[in-house]
Amino acid sequence: MPDLTTMPAESKTGQQQGTMGGGETPERLLVTDTRTGKEYQLPISDGTIKSMDLRQIKVSDQDFGLMGYDPAFMNTASCRSKVTFIDGDKGILRYRGYPIDQLAESSSYLEVAYLLMHGELPSSAAMKEWERNITFHTMLHENIKKFMDSFNYDAHPMGMLVSTVGALSTFYPDARDVHNAEARMLQIFRLIGKMPTIAAYCYRHRRGLPYVYPENDLSYTGNFLSMIYKMAEPKYQIDPVLERALDVLFILHADHEQNCSTNVMRSIGSSFADPFVAMAGAAAALYGPLHGGANEEVLLMLNEIGSKDKVGEFIKHVKNGERRLMGFGHRVYKNYDPRAKIIKQTADQVFELTGRNKLLDIALELEHIALEDEYFVKRRLYPNVDFYSGIIYQAMGFPTDAFTVLFAIARTSGWLAQWQEMLMDADQKIARPRQVYLGYDERYYVPRDKRP
Ligand code: ACO
Image (cartoon, rainbow, N blue to C red; front, side, top):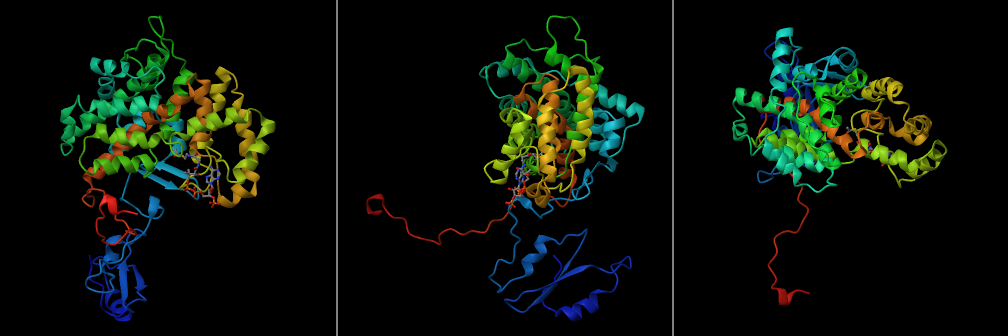
């Protein structure tokens, strides 16, 4: 921590406005502590001050020092990252610098997963090897099948997924070697490879259908569709439109910088727990209705509204604060979520094949009203990625409670890229926030018979 505590601000400014090695003028934040009259200059770097620099601001030597108070990390950067860039005001999303619309148009999910993990697009040879490595890790240990068999017939797929991903940790003790690059990459292959298989087993379990084994000659999403829908036929006929649509949806969901579940992945990973248990935690965070669970909630909401003419009534309840318009609003986007735009185009392609989902009309009406209504305009609430994704998933034949599982498959690459970046980052330590304690001061224990 730089010692900038004592000198008057003017003299320090004069002294420090010299060079920063490279001849740049250092940017500093000037702070006056009105409790003591002392002034401090805190270095600004990449548009941030270090919260640890606040600790030198004290009223006495015994004082712990100033902390930032930021529940829900509304304005706290927890890391420096090179993975994903979002400009929420402009509605921009880029993975490793590449705009999401270009990736959705031209790339594949597995290529995007490589990009997130390695930072660059792969050469043809690297891509072939990457695909091969992931394809060769799609099988699950037979005991995992038995493990999944023990779930109740109506178990929520996300509950099954979270537990099964956690259970994989017991099959791969080598995953604990998180400081070994080779061991880490093996777990990355395993997790990206096995997630569709686990997801498909969750689906089949709910239906009482036999599990279908992965097939190595199929694409990532083609194999997933086969494991979901294959019945007695020797080879499941994959529709290329659905295969590609699912691939695009996976690309759109692959990463989203420091969202709730990624923060959990990094946080658990910061204790050097293995990536299976860390990802089980991340998936659990995703399950919540304010995060990845919103896609399921949107469908329930649209079904509840039932028809276009009931939309106005529903919006009234939202504006009265009785309901939330699920699939709307975002912590970061204060503009149209760029992913929602692409999803609308994908929906058209899917509906051409499957027939139009009647819930789309209700969703379009909700969006139309909300985008013009002062309540939503003032709060800058726009459709997010989940507003339309569920409608497409439903048209593809997925049950509502499987939607978040699909999100989890796609987010696996992002979680792992962020986990790896965290482990490589010399600034990172075990994640451990501070608190502002507002409870009792010390008091004496009262025996039970003396309590009021
Ligand atoms: N419907 C109605 N009002 C809303 C909504 C909504 N969907 N979202 C936010 N608001 C209102 C809030 O009530 C608040 O109003 P106020 O200022 O009068 O109190 C204001 O907009 C700001 O909202 P916050 O809750 O403070 O925003 P925050 O950044 O904390 O929450 C969140 C973001 C959780 C996504 C929120 O918008 C929400 O609950 N949306 C619905 C659930 C959803 O779609 N989640 C998926 C997000 S995308 C993803 O995680 C993959």
